[in-house]
Length: 87
Image (tube, rainbow, N blue to C red; front, side, top):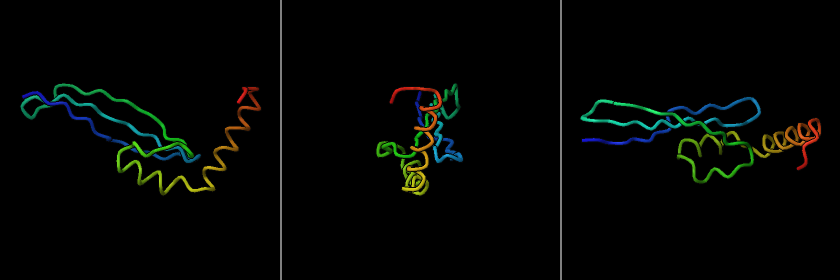
């Protein structure tokens, strides 16, 4: 029997409050893993994380405080100004 499993296998938080998520897609046949591929994405402070895995939602709820969101937005704006990127 062939089965595809998709699991969040790694969640990291970084200094600026971003939550990095790695998802693993595994192909399983008769209980043995045949292959796996990985996908990574970032949930930045202030992003909507309501569609994320429950574990990711819980971490974002704890990490993305109003203070962290404000500091992240300030840093992003300062970076745009430094690079002269229009908003």
